[in-house]
Amino acid sequence: MRYDSLAFLQKQINIDNPFAELANQEYEAFIFTSDGRTYQSRKAKKTPLKKGYFLAFWQKNSTNTNEPFDANNSADYLIVSVLDEVKIGYFEFTKAALIKHNILTNNNIVGKMAFRVYPTWEYDLNKTALKTQSWQSHYFTDLSNN
Figure: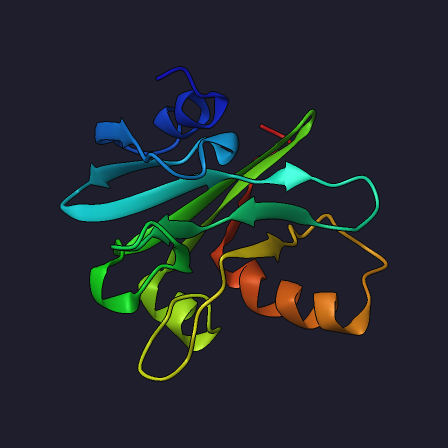
């Protein structure tokens, strides 16, 4: 597995047993452990017409249909790498944050199969994006100047 995001993250945190997820390969999807915790990883993509970075985050169910990840069987963390030339960093979302913001399916709330992340360097955002950036910023590490 030759992923830019894996090489980047290996410089930031201890990564054990990385293996590729079958779905979401376009987003360099892989799973790993670190210090006894499980992680799912994605590399976010810059989109030309909208602010922020986009990522897919879904799984196949028993009938081979795409569905959001469920809180009962997802990793402890979702780590999202943002590698945009000189702007680099990563989000390390806890499972609790993903549940709170309806990204993971939980109880009667259906999660999301894709979403946007807004690093702290993103400006001139609309109201909804600004609200999202506000909660996401607590999970973001900006390494642009390193």
